[in-house]
Amino acid sequence: MALDSAKKREIIAKFGNDEKDTGSPAVQIALLTERINEINEHLQQHKHDHSSRLGLLKLVGQRKRLMRYLKRKDHDKYLEVITALNLRDRV
Image (cartoon, rainbow, N blue to C red; front, side):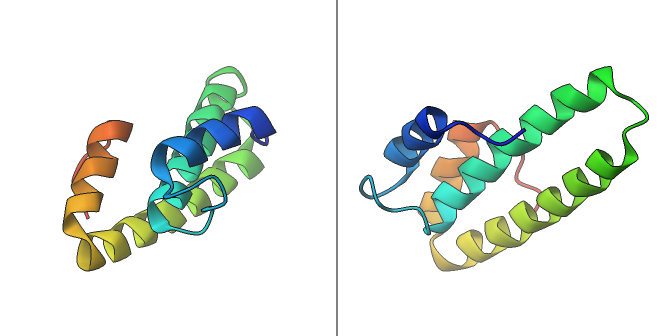
């Protein structure tokens, strides 16, 4: 379920300031979104996998906290990220 390194590099290149920028909130939100999407696909097939469902809820909460932080600190970047990732503005 982990992201492969090529996919991670692609996301970091798209949302980061440079190729080593893995800690910025925008990159973290994008990586979490990709992991959330993969777990959602997994749960479509394995409906009774409750441990993955709990992990999904944890990731969603973490992404929500990062989105709240980014919205507060850099609203323009926040709008750019939610538009690129096709997320709703519910924070």
